Length: 107
Image (tube, rainbow, N blue to C red):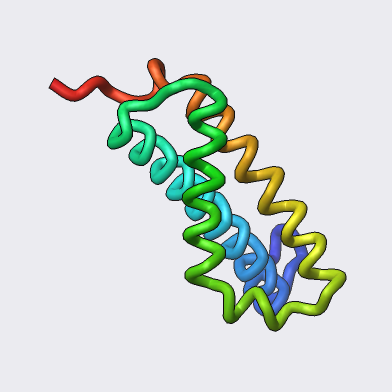
């Protein structure tokens, strides 16, 4: 800490910032795994199927967490909704499009 000129409070704040980002990355990976699992269970593959499964899973997550989302201010809700839609479509397209390379075949 002395070498970089940071106080203990500053380091604690930086760790707090990074822990939130690591949690976000972990949740995104868990969501992608869920989409891949749904595709495997339903025996589907392809970009469109990945997007549809991603939207289905996102809908289930949003319904489960509706109480916390409904209390957000309108401006923040719009930003968060845009982020969620973009992330959902991106994850679904990637997992569905790369299904043969990402999901191991069952024997």
